[in-house]
Length: 545
Image (tube, rainbow, N blue to C red; front, side):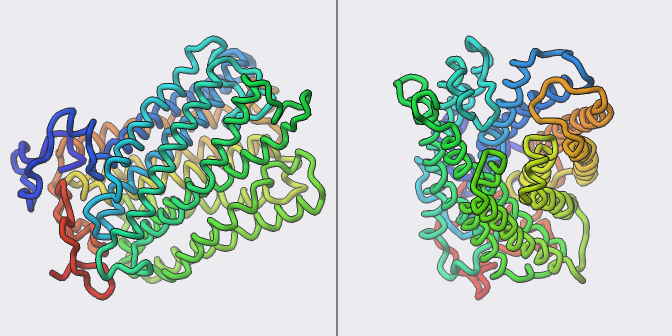
């Protein structure tokens, strides 16, 4: 059994069904180092991303501890900027993206009836590239001059002035990008080529659909980021002047190239979560997803439009009025397919026989807070408002509502939904609910006051601030510490017992309203599934022979 530490056969009373397929599973460290099994690699991705979440979280708590009151408390300004930069880079490239790939590895072959990913060895390589990249990112703190202090966007000319850690960060981004590209190719080829007979594209589960579109997005944008950081590297060491104004370059060009990657990237970090929520809500509403086709089109249109909005990050950088108008209207337009999804989820719940187990709580919570994040984004899309709010805490509030309350909460919903299938045991319902309510309350306590700080004019990435901002900063810091502790609780009280196989044995389908091929294999999922292509019913949700 793949996501459990000890092999299932050695646990008394946890003998999995269909255990004969588990013979020949390698044991010990070799199982993990050389693994080409999608389930094992998925598990490693998820454990890696949680580790990075904790490291990024510690940096965030240092930021918040410093901002508890005015004046300098714990760190100097340079160190503070290093913390804000590394927190962003680690959370995006180390926590959120690998976690989504972990879910994709685990679930896509199960959802489409494939025996494994299309390129298992490449799958192994794309995971193991993460380890040196993470080490290079984190080791920046121990290099001369400390970690990059540019903000996660690595804007020139600041990126020209950083010490050697900047070069290791560029190298790390290259490796992470290569890992993402390989992962994306793997996901695209798996979905297009390895679906079970009868599983047409328009019968695929929404999670698989969202990842197919996300993988195309990643393929398009990762080389753009690689180009931007390589040009930075050349400016630093090889005498070029791409972004150096003194040599005839243009620092604003860097921003354009970066955000052409950066804005689709934020959709890379939310579209798989949309897919997860589209799996959870129909299950607990005990209804088919309302408007399946429109959901697919909505995800595709979000992905296409995401390439047309990048300069809304640059309204204060000097742009012709026609340019600002175009990007403002395009950004407002992208809200329409997003709203379509929200209405579809709401319509799915409408008059459904709903029960509120932990996955559903996370899904409903996700909709609530994600919509708030979407609205604040729409407000920032208005040029006159954005000029006032640009680079204030309002922006920090907005993107945390989308990335934490969006990406992370979506993943929590998916974890509670699928983990019984991975481990063969049910999570502890009460602990799951404690994790949900503490996270939800403390998240809002941490980030809601930041809207007011931003509206009052407090800039982001500042180590010190005037006295009038103290109260809201203190509330935000208390919320941040509460939220951080809730995630440690989640690992200790929910994840760790499940990994050790402690808990009530999970049935094949623990959820009454669940549909899909992943519920057609035993719990825990055997090491090898769908070795022969399954025969599916007309809706491609059940195996018939």
